Length: 406
Image (tube, rainbow, N blue to C red; front, side, top):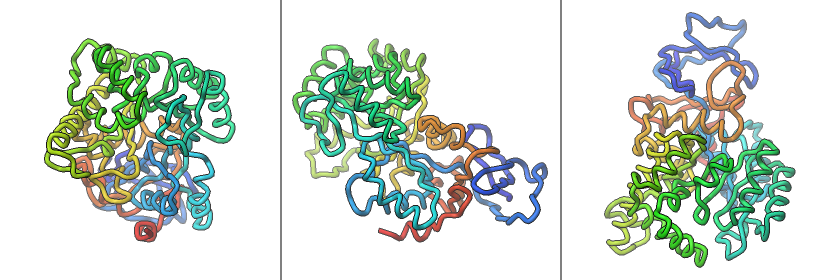
């Protein structure tokens, strides 16, 4: 009762809302005067609070560390009620699932993509990847991943074009999301073919370069994974976002409306601030590249991309468990309004997961995944950090418990 409601659909907030939850579902939403109180209902007075849908982290890496199940729960306490891991074997989630079962938790809702499907060559993450040596092997890996429960399949940057198209074909036939980390393939070509989305704003970088420079970067990356580390910043620092190549990509995005998961927080670099004692000229180049990553995110959004929020787990300018908050703040810095950034983290995220029917907005019939803030993120986006309570599947989460666990 008395909540300031941001429902995730993008409309203006409702100043004094009533939300009725029965079991794990929302059954009624609206002005308090228009929504009757069910008999025997428990009342929660949220005067002065903001309620929004549970946040969806489209890029969370659980990885192979004992603390990671607790990190996912820490993010749950910070309002992240669903996530996708875009590249990992399913057994890595057993620890998290065991804790959730032990504690009777409905969230975080886990969505997996299986290991990356990569192509021949020295893949940078051999423990998280499968290597497809030809088109048929790529197709088989995609089929196997889906059969084992993956709700998305991720193409990695060494996979050849024909094999990437085979993966997209499988995903389309099975109604599963296809996503990609691109540095060797052109985003526009794959968007036209039917790729649903990409991870990282840097996946657009090569497609924004003139063809000669594009091929030079591609060959450097295929020759050495290390070329990506500084190369992505050099690519973006020199981009002309109004070039003919750039306009061609914006046109494809405008027609296909792919999902783009910028993961800006992991790339964030600032003038005069070094995370690794780099030389001043390297620090400056990184900062310049990051500024164009912000601008490219806005241009993609303006062109028609569906922007989502991916925290990428561990990032340089956020504390443990706070990467999703930082990503939302950076989306606003990139040029999205606070409301648009919240939609990226809610309704758009649900669509990217293939869960629009039951997640992402606060409306009757949806799962009762809600976040209660003490502040107003529409007035100042940093208020997204003022998470006071989290409801997951109609049950309150012990926020203090999961934030305190290390």
